[in-house]
Length: 140
Image 1 (spheres, rainbow, N blue to C red):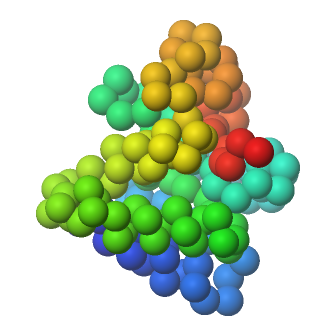
Image 2 (cartoon, rainbow, N blue to C red):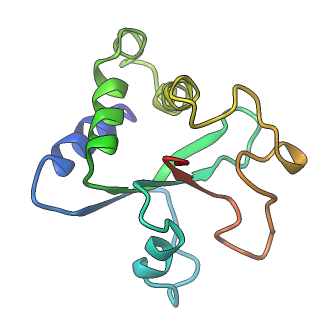
């Protein structure tokens, strides 16, 4: 069930790990030449890296996420798991993505509607560059 990843991430970030990476079972690593450190450098010390979704159904894809163990990430996951609107939907598959988008919009981390080029969330996407669809939070 997709909601369990939120609970597992909360538990992992409460532990001793400084970085926690979530990869869904159906995700695929297509470039083994890029180490995890390559992506961590892209974050420039910020806390959460997540991909834009390629469909129009949801703005973010929770299939691959990289979290730093910070108060910001722990609070985000706590609100995602315990929030009144979220708890009602724990039995609905994929809703955690929509709930995460809602939380990021409420926190001022995402625009209510995509504003960038071609409706992208943070910057223009390059079909060749794997980092071009990477969203990094918090913005500030």
